[in-house]
Image 1 (spheres, helix red, strand yellow):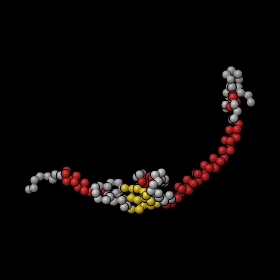
Image 2: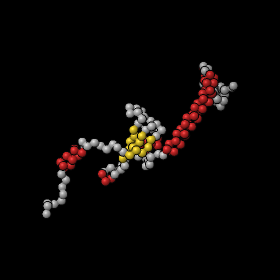
Image 3: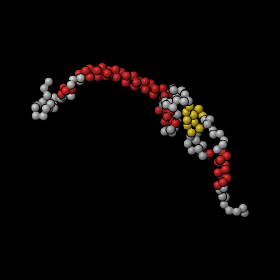
Image 4: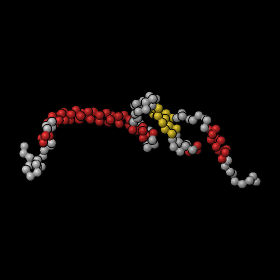
Length: 149
Protein backbone atom coordinates (compact mmCIF):
# COMPACT_ATOMS: atom_id res chain seq x y z
CA UNK A 1 0.00 0.00 0.00
CA UNK A 2 1.42 3.34 -1.00
CA UNK A 3 1.08 5.46 2.11
CA UNK A 4 -2.30 7.07 2.81
CA UNK A 5 -4.41 9.74 1.19
CA UNK A 6 -3.00 11.91 -1.60
CA UNK A 7 -1.50 15.19 -0.43
CA UNK A 8 -1.22 18.48 -2.25
CA UNK A 9 2.26 19.61 -2.99
CA UNK A 10 2.03 23.40 -2.57
CA UNK A 11 5.39 24.08 -4.14
CA UNK A 12 4.41 22.06 -7.19
CA UNK A 13 1.14 24.03 -7.57
CA UNK A 14 3.00 27.35 -7.25
CA UNK A 15 5.61 26.24 -9.81
CA UNK A 16 2.93 25.09 -12.30
CA UNK A 17 1.07 28.38 -11.99
CA UNK A 18 4.33 30.29 -12.43
CA UNK A 19 5.11 28.40 -15.64
CA UNK A 20 1.54 28.87 -16.94
CA UNK A 21 1.82 32.63 -16.39
CA UNK A 22 4.36 32.86 -19.21
CA UNK A 23 2.05 31.28 -21.76
CA UNK A 24 0.18 33.75 -23.94
CA UNK A 25 -3.41 34.24 -22.93
CA UNK A 26 -6.21 33.39 -25.28
CA UNK A 27 -7.56 36.72 -26.50
CA UNK A 28 -9.03 35.32 -29.65
CA UNK A 29 -12.73 35.04 -29.05
CA UNK A 30 -15.79 34.48 -31.14
CA UNK A 31 -17.03 37.49 -33.09
CA UNK A 32 -20.54 38.28 -31.82
CA UNK A 33 -21.57 41.46 -33.59
CA UNK A 34 -20.99 45.08 -34.48
CA UNK A 35 -22.85 48.28 -33.61
CA UNK A 36 -23.56 51.32 -35.78
CA UNK A 37 -20.53 53.15 -34.34
CA UNK A 38 -18.25 50.47 -35.81
CA UNK A 39 -17.29 48.78 -32.51
CA UNK A 40 -16.77 45.00 -32.75
CA UNK A 41 -17.85 42.71 -29.90
CA UNK A 42 -16.25 39.39 -28.94
CA UNK A 43 -16.84 36.63 -26.43
CA UNK A 44 -15.07 33.59 -25.01
CA UNK A 45 -17.90 31.34 -23.81
CA UNK A 46 -18.03 29.99 -20.26
CA UNK A 47 -16.38 26.61 -19.77
CA UNK A 48 -16.80 25.24 -16.23
CA UNK A 49 -14.49 22.30 -16.97
CA UNK A 50 -11.48 24.66 -17.03
CA UNK A 51 -12.73 26.93 -14.26
CA UNK A 52 -14.32 29.69 -16.36
CA UNK A 53 -17.78 30.12 -14.87
CA UNK A 54 -18.65 33.32 -16.73
CA UNK A 55 -18.13 34.24 -20.33
CA UNK A 56 -15.41 36.79 -21.11
CA UNK A 57 -16.79 39.65 -23.19
CA UNK A 58 -15.06 42.68 -24.65
CA UNK A 59 -15.15 45.06 -27.59
CA UNK A 60 -12.68 46.60 -29.98
CA UNK A 61 -13.33 50.32 -30.50
CA UNK A 62 -13.05 51.88 -33.93
CA UNK A 63 -10.31 54.21 -32.69
CA UNK A 64 -7.86 52.53 -30.33
CA UNK A 65 -6.83 55.73 -28.52
CA UNK A 66 -10.37 57.09 -28.02
CA UNK A 67 -11.00 56.70 -24.29
CA UNK A 68 -14.36 58.47 -24.49
CA UNK A 69 -15.67 55.82 -26.88
CA UNK A 70 -19.43 55.67 -27.08
CA UNK A 71 -21.25 52.34 -27.09
CA UNK A 72 -24.95 51.61 -27.26
CA UNK A 73 -26.94 50.75 -24.13
CA UNK A 74 -27.90 47.34 -25.52
CA UNK A 75 -24.29 46.29 -26.11
CA UNK A 76 -23.21 47.75 -22.78
CA UNK A 77 -25.82 45.61 -20.99
CA UNK A 78 -24.54 42.53 -22.84
CA UNK A 79 -20.92 43.32 -21.96
CA UNK A 80 -21.73 43.66 -18.26
CA UNK A 81 -23.73 40.44 -18.22
CA UNK A 82 -27.11 42.05 -17.56
CA UNK A 83 -28.47 40.42 -20.67
CA UNK A 84 -27.79 36.92 -21.88
CA UNK A 85 -28.10 37.29 -25.64
CA UNK A 86 -26.45 40.02 -27.72
CA UNK A 87 -28.76 42.61 -29.29
CA UNK A 88 -30.08 42.00 -32.78
CA UNK A 89 -29.55 44.40 -35.66
CA UNK A 90 -33.31 45.10 -35.82
CA UNK A 91 -33.36 46.04 -32.13
CA UNK A 92 -30.40 48.39 -32.57
CA UNK A 93 -31.95 50.10 -35.61
CA UNK A 94 -35.31 50.49 -33.87
CA UNK A 95 -33.72 52.11 -30.81
CA UNK A 96 -31.59 54.35 -33.05
CA UNK A 97 -34.74 55.57 -34.81
CA UNK A 98 -36.36 56.32 -31.44
CA UNK A 99 -33.25 58.22 -30.34
CA UNK A 100 -33.25 60.34 -33.53
CA UNK A 101 -36.97 61.07 -33.12
CA UNK A 102 -36.38 62.27 -29.55
CA UNK A 103 -33.56 64.54 -30.72
CA UNK A 104 -35.84 66.07 -33.39
CA UNK A 105 -38.67 66.59 -30.89
CA UNK A 106 -36.30 68.22 -28.41
CA UNK A 107 -34.98 70.58 -31.10
CA UNK A 108 -38.54 71.54 -32.10
CA UNK A 109 -39.52 72.22 -28.48
CA UNK A 110 -36.37 74.27 -27.94
CA UNK A 111 -37.13 76.37 -31.02
CA UNK A 112 -40.75 76.84 -29.94
CA UNK A 113 -40.01 77.84 -26.36
CA UNK A 114 -36.94 79.95 -27.08
CA UNK A 115 -39.22 82.50 -28.79
CA UNK A 116 -41.55 82.71 -25.79
CA UNK A 117 -38.55 82.95 -23.43
CA UNK A 118 -37.22 85.96 -25.33
CA UNK A 119 -40.52 87.86 -25.02
CA UNK A 120 -40.85 86.88 -21.36
CA UNK A 121 -37.31 88.13 -20.66
CA UNK A 122 -38.12 91.50 -22.25
CA UNK A 123 -41.19 91.85 -20.06
CA UNK A 124 -39.24 90.98 -16.91
CA UNK A 125 -36.52 93.58 -17.40
CA UNK A 126 -38.32 95.97 -15.10
CA UNK A 127 -36.54 97.18 -12.01
CA UNK A 128 -37.66 97.73 -8.45
CA UNK A 129 -40.88 96.32 -7.07
CA UNK A 130 -42.30 95.60 -10.52
CA UNK A 131 -39.54 93.13 -11.35
CA UNK A 132 -41.03 90.51 -9.01
CA UNK A 133 -43.94 88.34 -10.08
CA UNK A 134 -47.26 89.70 -8.86
CA UNK A 135 -50.31 87.58 -8.19
CA UNK A 136 -53.88 88.81 -7.64
CA UNK A 137 -54.48 86.67 -4.56
CA UNK A 138 -51.49 88.11 -2.62
CA UNK A 139 -51.07 91.51 -1.00
CA UNK A 140 -48.33 93.75 -2.31
CA UNK A 141 -47.74 95.45 1.03
CA UNK A 142 -49.00 93.84 4.25
CA UNK A 143 -52.29 95.40 5.28
CA UNK A 144 -52.59 97.56 2.12
CA UNK A 145 -54.97 95.34 0.17
CA UNK A 146 -54.58 93.24 -2.92
CA UNK A 147 -52.56 94.16 -5.97
CA UNK A 148 -54.49 96.10 -8.56
CA UNK A 149 -53.70 95.92 -12.22
